[in-house]
Length: 67
Image (tube, rainbow, N blue to C red; front, side):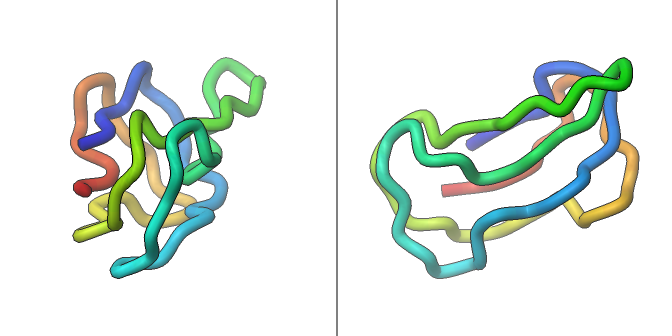
């Protein structure tokens, strides 16, 4: 799972449910404190569920993507 590392706004989700990803592949762009943070996959796997929606605010520790 990927959880929000900090409060921010989800700018773009770069993957789709069912998509295979490799370790360190970008999966989400999170804007926090006027900076864009690229959130990367923690390991190889398949995206099971995307919990975050583009243009919505997220809190620290909120579940964003499940693998």
